[in-house]
Length: 141
Length: 93
Image: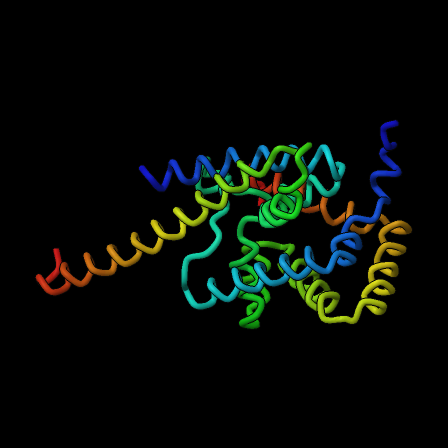
């Protein structure tokens, strides 16, 4: 049976990524590598949507923005991508989850799952990001 | 030309895997995969052995396209630097 909108909205998503050590390790590892390559001025992962169609995807600019954030340039970072602080925080959470021992990681991901189920925070962030993307796409910001 | 072909292949493979991600993991993870194609890529490799998804060949195509893009990007940068050096050595335009 199809999930209702409410069930979908409040379903844990990020916590399942945190609970899976390999998935978290790869995401945090490749994400950090991408960031490192960018900071060194070397080529890295190119967004297939932007490089083929010329249209930025919702996450385009996040690497640049997080790079600016790491240099302490908050205004520049927010001008490039308003969700940069959120994604930097997410990256740090994933790195923390990867480093934790199994029991602590399970407790940590369960706590995040409870937060997601109660507040629907992941759905809010993702839909906020989609809204921000559409606003930027039509040049309203 | 080759760069565009690589990007187009990466896009097609990415969309195929993204559709499978939407189908298997639901709407929110699908959106997460759209926002962060890196997640889609990692998810694709983690589920490449799942025969029902039929994404293994697409993942190889996507990986080859990414590597091609990185190599061509690097060659492009080096060529651009060399061209600039030659123009500078000749006293500019």
